[in-house]
Image 1: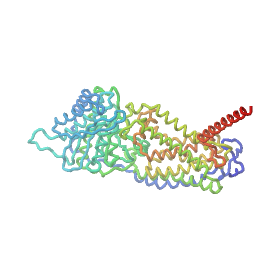
Image 2: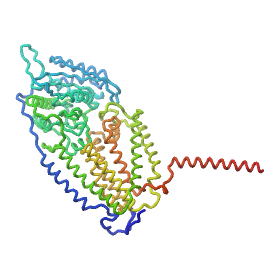
Image 3: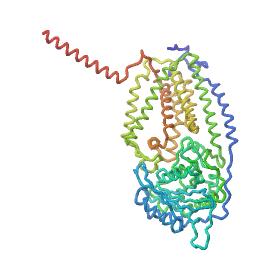
Length: 634
């Protein structure tokens, strides 16, 4: 065991108030080297600044928009009044589908119906229907206009989404074949498809179905999604996808320009931090998400927020005809602009909007990776510091291994409970936050998970708690091992989704300085540790605040994992990071103990219990033998 150096203090002690020299066990972090590493950020920042561009919109349509707001409002009111309950799989959903086909038949637009079954969380296995009408153009390249016609079954759904369905019908009417046979129809430059999806209020199931089928064919070059167009809120664009991608900037800028022209207000979208979070944790409740994830440029026009509106009082009387007309005309101008001169690049990329300009995603990734460099330099220097002082990291690594085993056990138990039906099951799509499944916590299953996690910790605890006075060198070894594990986890984040560093960087840079606070008081050390949690908590805060989930956000996040919307790789990285964070927390709290060697190692709870049972049985047998001997002797 390494001996302590002069002026060494046990964490939390108040002796030795004078400042320790640089490079000592109490001040092991090389601040100069750490600060010098930030010079690496200069070049990526310069490149990011050079990538700032202002995309130009497509050309203005030749003819003014002919969107009839009065007709659209009447259609929305009719759908909401006649078929108010249109949850997937219900009779109301089937009648709404028949109503939609009837409306298009009025304009002599033939329709195709795609029917399939899906296991929807909270609904079970239901039958869904996508209905499409196609207007053949001069090119087979297709511009797709989408609106879901279902609702969550708690109200008429006049705004969400009878208004979008009505706008879809009104847009299709403009391209319908004229009723007079003598009048030759005007063919559009591109094929236009008008798609009414089912299951849109339950994670965009209809859009996902269509995107899976059409993405490999490469025919769809742009998607315009219409959702909740007649609300009281300002116009808004939704551009997030199910993967860290963004639609073509020209499509977004064209949609923004015509919306500004028609409404007098530039449409809102997620701010800089919100867009970074959407790229780091891809998540959306609108139907552009599946298309963007599969390389198809798509944008949603809405008057809702990041969370689609859903309320009991979403009635026809609350529809705003003026707003419906303005956003409807903007959508029509967008479709006509795309049809007149499609200059969109195929596929999707990533970027972040700052006002009416954007920064390329690859430049932001370079900045994030460069910001990781100072932490990596500091962590490697700590490792070299331990090597120079001959401080063994093996016990700390074994302690970290035990903590990782506990967290992996929790992950396995979570998966096993899901296989047993404890968590909601179904298609891997985000549930609507307004549905019961998004807010009903399975208390018994969560208690079982917590209980088994506590049991795993109790089994591992005897070898992880201090059994003697722990030296400063051993504390430093424990922190260094945890920081090196975080370095590996951060490199895995870079390999999977570099935007995910947004959640990791605050913790990495704050926790790197925990070894420097070994001699600080307990509240200071714990405050530094808690401050590092701000990055990971951004995910929960985003779900709770931006998407209106509130205190249901933690359960909703677990539900996304259970459904498979969040993949296995980020979950595994998060569990590894949690194990390293647990070790840092133990050191900060003064409860860290290095993994004991063979001589110090205590018996585990199971071995101890078995040993007590065996000894008790032997003791009883010995007493019985002694009793028989005395009886014979007597």
